[in-house]
Length: 348
Image (cartoon, rainbow, N blue to C red; front, side, top):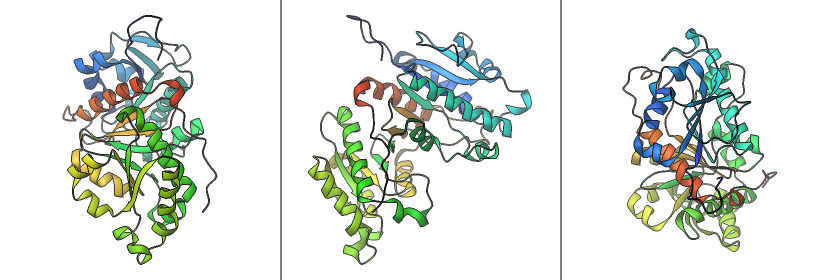
């Protein structure tokens, strides 16, 4: 964050990619940015479609810029990445052109991250299907950001009652075992500890889940806990990471209040193991956070919701929480501490 000598801390500049213009991204972004608490917390830079932004009074007073013109901003700014035809920005009716456009908003925001024009990034929901239909291989924001910066990252669901990080993201269940390695899990635990230490003010206590039912029952129900997860925990502990496990997921999540009191974060082994309890505990206020990037990245934990787009019924609360979390993380993440390790070559 840029600060003048002797001046009061400035509000963090948060880049916001608008998501699929045919989804609820534009309307929940506009509604969230109208909230006084959000306006006080950050300076928004919205990357999106010109005509779509012009639909919302909230954006009419923003400074205007093209991606090529963007520098360090000093007030709310709208960056016009596209000017889509009316047929390609109809709420509830996604298009192939719109799929290409929503990916362009993400890449423009990433360019701004690289140039350090923004202190944090918040991404409105995109459609993996529509981006893929446009001919762009896309598994998710997390994967694109990791590839763009060449770093190891972690997806973490940050909720009011519990934080849950994921050792693997959008991968088939059949390939989970081969994706988990001692080296990879050890580095993830170190990244998780390093990233959360400024947030909790000390070394965070990390609960590490097993992959198999009952955490493998000592090898009876699978060997991953014995051969991979357990050794990774021990290696991380030797590196001063306060990690505990492997623990059975069903037993741990049965007492969420106790988990929140005893542990600062849970490391789940796969997508649904972590996201089901995170969304069940508090769907609206749980924020998707990407750890390990040069600047923090957050996102509301929901999709494009085409059935709600344009109806005015979509709640902006998840976007409010994501924006406030981005600003808060930027405030405790000095540039020198925000870089994750380079992506390792993995093998058991």
